[in-house]
Length: 474
Image (cartoon, rainbow, N blue to C red; front, top):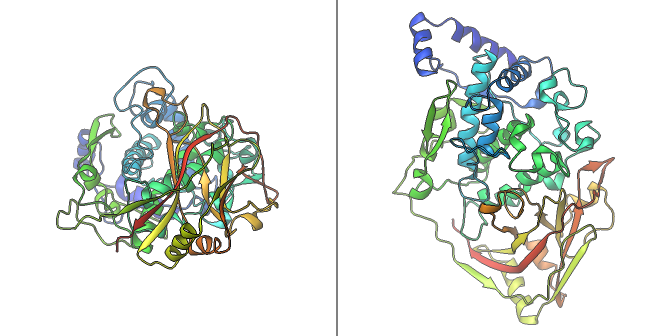
């Protein structure tokens, strides 16, 4: 793959003088027949030209003034910043909205072009960290302590992640439940785009950042060089959902297709984009993923495509006051009448309806720095990953990143919502039970094959727990 990038560089470098003049005016090189290939960082090393060029670009970008849109500081601030200035496009990232995947695709695209120019490697493409692969759960070695590429390292991560002794738990990188629906987004936040933002996206952020690292906060995460590889994988998995799970994008929704965002090209000039300009990455943005899925093109906008109407029915549960989530395992029990149990068992056999456990009004004062595994039933006593990752009672994670934290963008604060789809196995387990038990168990990254238990930095309160039933779209 590095050879392919070198060939691309030589091809581009050999273009005519007219093309070179055009690049100076427009900030773009002539389009090549073959698309740029975003490589799996697991196939690269610190001596790969892709990584050397990335480190060189970071050094160049970090030397530029904060007010320069092509600087490292400015690009990070587009996602989020603690700086008091309010420059164009700062703090405009989309989290816990239907624009998450589309906004981040635009952001990465223009960032990639800036890095390409700053590195001088015009064949460069952003690599991705395939943390969903069992062989890539540790931080890539070129980002760890002692790397020969110092620009890729920062002390602002979980120390055990940084030294390679800790890895991402399988349950924190799983998207199986997220991709069990073909629906992109719903008002109750049960679509693939909605639930994916918590786990795996948010869980990876918190696992890497730990209690106070850059990746843990929406305001600082883009300062960490690994951020962009993390989001490249999130972008790749959007394509995986479309290709392998039958999902489709809301190309008939004018609100989604027509929303405009402003970024900056490699010359620092402001550019605008909408979802319809990035929906087909290979054709419109000229990049593909190494070993990525082959996608059919989507027409955008597509007014002829009928909207997917989802019927949402609340399923009443009567909870007493819900205790806060902290260091201790928190079990919550609610009586389950014979009628309610019968309805849930019937729904377990339904092919047209889905059942979700929903937590709403979830909030805390500061970043907790942990992930709470959420179980319908008791949590397993053993902390070995082999007993946790595929446990039948595990339905998801409570992990706060984009919303629910009062200290982050307080003027824009809103509580978090989590929606966990309950599998047929989970529902069937209620057959002989007169109560519904939900257990929250805090964890951090894996250490020596077991889930670590770092101290919770800020307790989390849940205002409401409910069950909702949705009629599926086919």
